[in-house]
Every structure is written in structure tokens, then in C-alpha cells.
Amino acid sequence: MKQSLIIVCLLLSACNLSSVPPAVPAGPTAYIDPSYPTMESAPVTSLQTSSGIDVRADRAWRDGKQVNVDVCFTLLDASDWSIWNASLQYPGGSVLDFSSTLSSIQEPVEGQSGQRCDTLSFLNVPPDADLSSVTVTVDAIAAQPRADDYCTIYMPKIQQALTERGIAITLNCADVNGVQTMQITSKPDTMSQAEAEQIVFSDEFYTVKGPWSFTFNLGQ
Image (tube, rainbow, N blue to C red; front, top):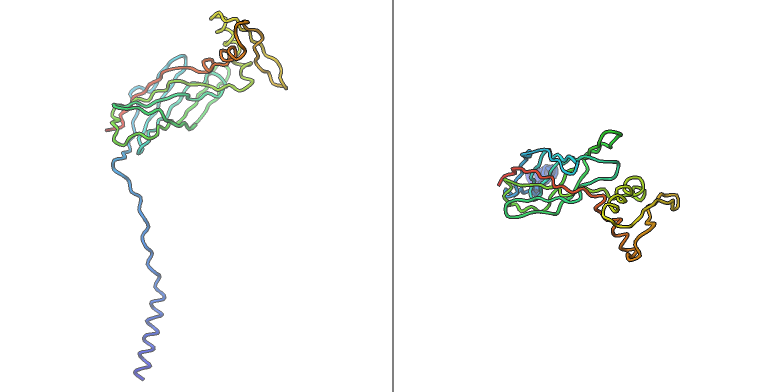
């Protein structure tokens, strides 16, 4: 009888143990290095104007090895304008590597300029960089032309610039497979076709240079 009670107790104990869920090992927790600070700042001056374009910086924030800046700028026409060159300078160094993310866009309408807003992200900023006086500079804004933009937007000002410089190149637009295409109709005999195209299709005609600079305090 005593032996039977022992067996029953052992069986009950086994059942109770099997009903207890196994302990789940704790997963790894994210480690935030205190040397990678996060800080937000408004610019000392929020609006800069150069070459007829207003550029506004609303805020900048430091997040680890990255500095982000919200920037808006005037759209002169319906071309695909974007920030072409930008830089970040701080005491002892600078960063030229950046990416741009579209935040919003308001297309220009007749008699009124449009506006585009982007977030610029400067990458690989050293965590020990002194950003108590950091300057973000937009160096150039450009609109890479579409094929038909040359005839509808750029040809008049390219022709005017060539005339003012005394360069005897004449431009015209012709229908090529249903698309109006800018062509070089005449050039000096001493100039090769490649040299003429290099002048005519230079990015200077669709690039507006600043600079537009903004200073922030993002801590030491």
C-alpha cells in the first residue's frame, strides 16, 4: 500500500511539472552608445536669398552619426529642381556625403513660384565632432532637363548666353519622332560638333549656384 502511494505521488508531481511553461530566455536589448548624442536646433538665420531663389532651413537634428536638416527652396518653373550640392562644416572637419528625401512640393502656377521641401541627411559625422557651431551650406540647386525641356524652357536663355559671349552657335528646335528636340543648326567651322555640344548642353544652364548657408548649435 505504501509503495502504491509513492508511485501516485510521483505521477502527480510529473503532471504538475509538465504544466509549467518553460522559461523563455531574455532577448538582447538595444545598446545606445552615450557617445552618439541626439539634439535638435533651429538655425540662427532661417532664410537666405541668392540668385533669385529663397532657401529656408526650418530645423536640424543630430541622431548618432547623422545630421538631418529640413530645407525648403523656391521653384522657378516646372522643371525637376533638386539640391545638387550641399555640405556640412564644423570646427576641424566637413562632410560632403549626403542624401535627400522629398518632404513636400508645391508646383509653380502662373505668376506664383512653387516650393519644394527636402530633408538632407549628412552621413558618417564623427560622434565626437564639435557641432556647437555647425554650418550647413546648399551650394547649388539644379534641374536636370527632360528632352522637351530644352525647347520649352532652356533654348532661349542658352541662345542669349551664346550671343552675349560672341559664340557663333545657332540653335533651333525640330520634331524628332514626335518630340521637339533642340539642335545645333550652325557653328564655327573651327569648332567640332562635340565641342559645340559641350558648350550648349553644359549644366551651367540648368544650375543655380548659391551659396545658402545656415548655422546650428547641435552640441559638443
